[in-house]
Length: 299
Image (cartoon, rainbow, N blue to C red; front, side, top):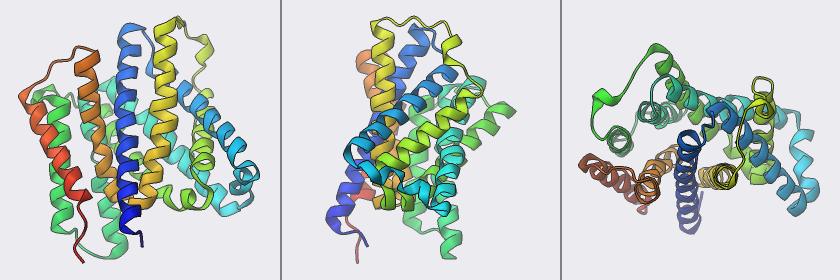
């Protein structure tokens, strides 16, 4: 069982990862709107280069340990499932949901992943959800809804494809929360997250050829792409999944909802986005959930 200090560290690490995702979204928005970058190009680049970065760092820091996961047939299979069923599928389905609807709709649908995680945890434990768990999910989801739509349900565009991809994003987000814990504790962040991204990126190369895209590599493009790759992918996933391995997938998935708060703040400051009263309500609901989850549990 995690000590109080480990639990606090896990919460802070998970929140830091979610915050990095919020920054990534703003870098991505800049690339989409100002540089004409496509989602397919960005997803492929972020997975390949973030994976390479983590694997190289792992080889430099841990040396021979990086290859251990490939020597264990069971764990190798788990890593491949995590790479395709979690890392790659989550990336693709989320951006596909945006393509067939909008960012707000995709965010709300992907944020259903704590419900899936809680359902699996309860089925495994043969129990019903606790009142606190249900309340935490309700408040967090409502907060994400307000931040993503400014409280206007009509801004959500739900087509059949958007619904399928959005629910796929939620399911795959739940998958990488649930599948990564044991692997991370055994082999470490560099090996598991690095190889998972690299494998997912290689699979993407079967469908997307980044070198065929007409991308103008000026200072803005290079800086924002580096931000997505380093901060929004390599650092974000490493911190978040390390935190999840400490606090557990259910709490981790709720703490990860700090992402839209950071995205809204950065968008306000640097991208000139508007701020609505319902955004403030969303802030309060999500931060309230985070604070409640962070409080020490009663014995």
